[in-house]
Image (cartoon, rainbow, N blue to C red):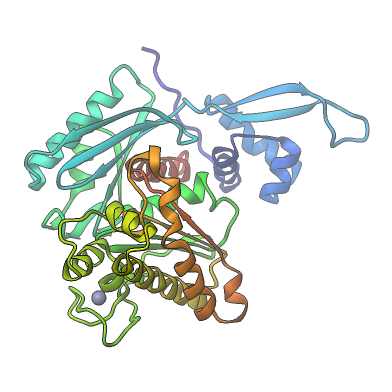
Length: 395
Ligand SMILES: [Zn+2]
């Protein structure tokens, strides 16, 4: 197999151009100059080493609408398969893996059950999944892992993961050692946000919040174009915003947190107390649609709690866009029947948000949408691509 070209030394402008092209796929040199704020000369100097390294292609011939003389515009395109990344969402039961190109398009995916989720056994299973996804593809250069819990992304350490029962596990280091690939580890909700920032609604936004409502309530924040990690690894804990001082007890020891009202376990517990044990979230949504008063009330309370929580985010941070997703707001992890499940919670989320958001904070765009497991793994791959793009050619 031919040796991969040595990465050139990139200037900050080179990194900026590469980032922009990974986000957009292609652009004319004129558009690149506009989008990055660089001069045409700086664009030429930034693009040249990336063309030589095989990360970009240049095509001419498209009639320019930009020049008065109608000169053909040269379009610079990212060679999406020049570098491939594997993303894996790690849970205690399963590993969800995807192989992605530089635009985070999924080329292959593989899900494997987890037997033993002790650190050593899990690292071996992750390494095995990586080997299966990279077989025959020498362009695979990095791995991103998304793990629920308190993650030190800088070191790749899992500081604490309740679902895995881990404390201080150097996961990134171990997977890198086993696979020989650059490995990033990120909190799973921040990984989802990273995917949105590079390839989704977050492109071009300076602030974005993403809230996942499941057994727990997760939240990741983009502020001034940066993903917020918090000084002590904790930030955006919207699940523990107080919505009702007399409300149900939360596992954090307080009463009436958003999570204690709107987490899926709480919804099911309240339905069990009302005489409907053993339901799933989809069953509760179905009952609410048929007008069953307990289901209507429980989901209305949950929606209002989520709306109050996101209004707090909007009031504090002025987020431009807030994405709310996850199984507890009634979506199914199966893509086939996801859309309609949002009808039950949606009006309650929006009503509480509008009531609680202060002044112009209410202008945040609120979007409720389904969350599929492949999205988590894609977010992990986006972190790996982000790491590659940010460090490529930098010493
Ligand atoms: Zn709490």
